[in-house]
Image (cartoon, rainbow, N blue to C red; front, top):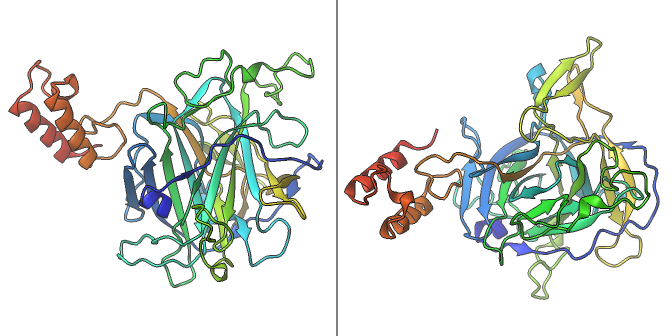
Length: 424
């Protein structure tokens, strides 16, 4: 993954929205999910400001790194909610497949949406992709080296509810990750990757953003739309950004994938990748909020969302698609309508997922860091040692590990002991 692995992250700060230029039916159209043998390969943590990168190869009970000092404020992460019923086959949605010629098979933008509390600051996001693009693994670490030209662009929206005529959408931030890793397997299995993209940094470099501002106070976020929650242009007594009138703010996120040989991501005038490598699927996993699958007793199941768990709120069982505008220039799209997969159900040896995709928003949550995790990013590594030494040299309280007001050998010894013990 070139943009993560080498720290070359192409950041496109949005100044305009996806153009919805055509009306479409607002009742969801049913689509079929994509399925196949998916192997979850790795989780990647990447900090935009520091360039810190932590790759956790999944399997053997290894898990993704923690989210540092942030906690989930909106979460759709249970990718296979029927696993508890004994169903293990992986379904996902193939967002882009150049081998197919339908208008909803390539060059499309998928937009998922939901509800979140107003004045919500986001400092990290969780994304994922599933792909059949063949990759190499030159260092034999189990992770693909990166498919040249394979890219994804994620965008976050204020006032988005997925409909062509009932929203006040406005883009906040967008980033593009290039040379995404693919499948290093030669047995036909698809590769699944997830990533936590840390947006926090200094004000000049930060991409943190606030959703649903009510008071023109960004709360320290770098991007926000002042007073966006307050608009009521139809004078119905409810904010235009609260379509379902539940007191929560309408927001959305979108992803568009780029096949190899189709775009010049680094702006050097040369198309990145080989078009011959583009005829493979790339898509995203399904997800739901925390909860429990309930057996309806008739062969179907429903999902009981547990809103007491942080981030488990505001799920919507539908998503929108924006398709390329026929004859339009690159990037011009039209609103193709709302789509879903038939609702949540577990039926025998197959299940129909919710039309919600794996995604998490993280924000400041008072996370209690492990003592040796000095930079509070959920990983113990060189960066923590370096930060401790800097604090120790400055006689900062953060390096006073025995809390006696002095900085000496005992603090160093206590830190090394804590570092060696690891985090729970």
